[in-house]
Amino acid sequence: MVAIDGPAGAGKSTVARQVAERLGFIRVDTGALYRAVGLIALERGVSLEDGPALGTLASGLELAFVEGPSGPRLTVNGSDREDDLRTPDVADAASKVSALPEVRAALLEAQREMGVDGGVVLEGRDIGTVVFPDAEVKVFLTASAEARARRRLGDLEQRGVESTYEDVLAAMRARDTRDSSRKHAPLKPAEDATVVDSTEMTQDEVVAHIAGLAQQS
Image (cartoon, rainbow, N blue to C red; front, side, top):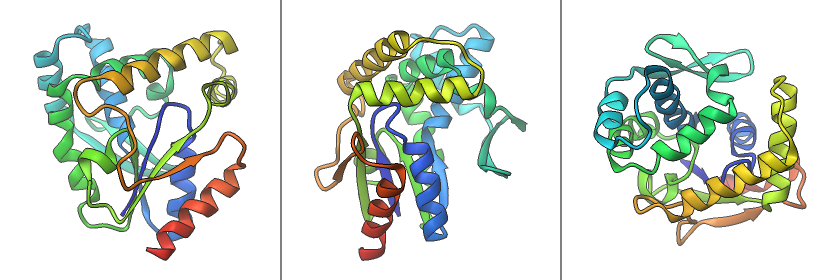
C-alpha cells in the first residue's frame, strides 16, 4: 500500500496515477470523495458549515470509481461527475467540508474499504496519518505555493476554465492554511513519511522516486 499525502496542487493525482500504472496497482483518489460531498452540498444548497447535515449527506452518497479512458473516474449516485469535481468552486467547497469531523467520519470507512486489499496507491491529505497509518510506503508530496499555483493554473486553462495566477495563488494559500490548521486530521506529514519536494523535480523524476520506494519496501 502506497499512501501519498500533500497540499493542493502538489501533483498528487497525476503522480499517483503514474505510480500505480508503473507498479500495476489501483489508484484511489480520496480527495475526490470530499469534492463529491462539496459538489452535492453546493447543488442542494446545504451550508458548508453545517457539520451534521453534511455528515448525513456524505453518508447517503453512493461513491464508486469506474475505469475510464484516462484512469478511474468517480461516480456519485451512479452518475459520472468527474469533470464537475475539478472546478475551483468545488475545490474550495471540498477544503471546507473536509475540515468537519462529521464528514471525515462518514467517509473514513469508505476510504478504508477501497484500500483494504492492498495493491493500491491512495492519495489525499491524511492517508498516512489517519486512514492507513500502517501503510508500507508513506510519501508527503509537496512543492512551493508558487509552483503549485502555476501547475493548477495550467490545468484550469487546459479545461477551459478562466482564472489568473494571482487568484489561483491566493486560493492555494488560503486552502493550505485551512488544511493545515483544522482541528481534525490536519494536513501534515506522517512521522515516518518520506517528504518529496517536487518544486525543482520533473514529473518523471517524482514518479520514479516514489515507485522506487515501493519496490524497495
